[in-house]
Amino acid sequence: MRKYIGQSMLLFLACATTLFAFAWVRVWVVSLLDMGQFKTILDQFREFEKFAPIEFDALFTYAGRVGMTYDEPIVILCTVVWCVSRGSDVVSGELNRGTLEMMLSQPIRRITLLATHATVSVAGLALLCLMVWGGITIGIEATTVTETVDPPSFRIPMINIDVPLTVADPVTEEIPLRQRVNSSTYAASTFSLFAFGFFLLGLSSMFSAFDRYRWRTVGAVVGVYILQLVMFGLGKAAASLEWLLSMTFFSCYRPQKMTSLVTNDGLGAPWSLVTPIPDAAFPPLVYPLVLITLGMICYGIAARHFSRRDLPAPL
Image (cartoon, rainbow, N blue to C red; front, side):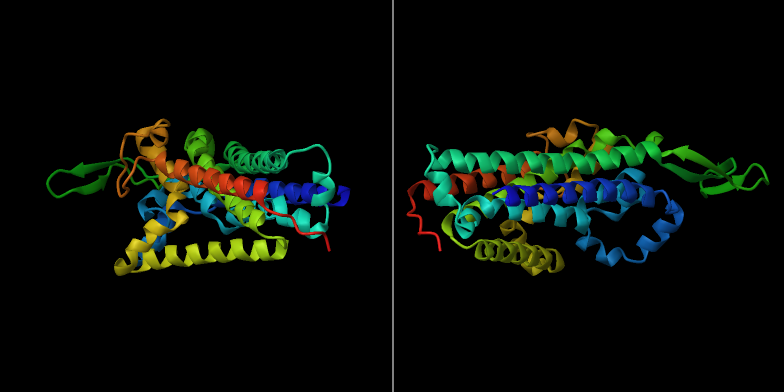
C-alpha cells in the first residue's frame, strides 16, 4: 500500500511539474512569434479553420495565443493520465492488487471508501488545473514582447490610403506581456479543464466499479475516449456528420471560447447561464456544468453498483 501511495505521489508531482513548466514555456514561445508574420501564415490555411478550436482571428491576439495552452496535447495528456490512473484504481485497482478485502474488513463503508478515492482524485485534479493557470500567470509576468510601432500616418478619405507623415523607420519596443494580457482572463478556461477532467474521473470510476482488472478498466476508458475523439473529428470535418458533435463530450470542452468571451465582453461573460454565445446552442457556463453533471452521474452509478456487487476472492 505504501508503495502504491508513493507511486501516486510521484505521478502527481510529475504531472504537476510538467504542466507548470510547459505552461510557462508556452507563454514564452508566444513572445517569439511576430504578429504580422503569424497572421500571414494563418491566412494561407483558412480552409482548415474549421478544425481549430477557435477562429483564426482570435489567434492574432496575445490573449488568444496564450489561451491555446489549454488545447495543447501535453496539457490534455497529463490531465487524462491523472484522471484515468486515479479513477481506474477505485475498485478494480484494489481488487487487482488484492488489497480491497483487507480494507473492507475494517469498519468502513464501501461508499466511504469510494468517496475517499474521489476526494483525493478531485483535489489532485484541481491542483493540476491550478498549476496550468499558475504557469501561465508566471509566464505572463516574466515575459516581454517586441512590438513594431509604425510612424504616424494620415488616411486619405474616400480612397482609404495611408500617407506617412515622416520618413522615419518603424520603431521596435519591448513591452511587458502583462500589459497586453491579464492572467484572470483564463479563470474560466481553467474551470473548463477541471470539468473535462472531472468527467473522466467519474467515467473511469464507473468502469472500475464494474470490473476486477485494472488493465481492462483502463482499456475500456481509453477506448471510449478514442471513439469520442474520432466522432468529434468527423463531426468537424464533414457537414453531413455534424450531428456527431452532439454525441461527444469533447463538444463541451471549450476553453478557447471562454477566452474569447472574456476578451470581447469582460471577465463575467463566461460565467453566464442566460446569455447566449455565437455559434453555440447554450450559454457558456452550461458546457462545463454538463461535464460536471455527467461526471457526478458516473460517480453515482459507480457508488450504487459498488455498494451492491459481490467481490471476488483475491487471486
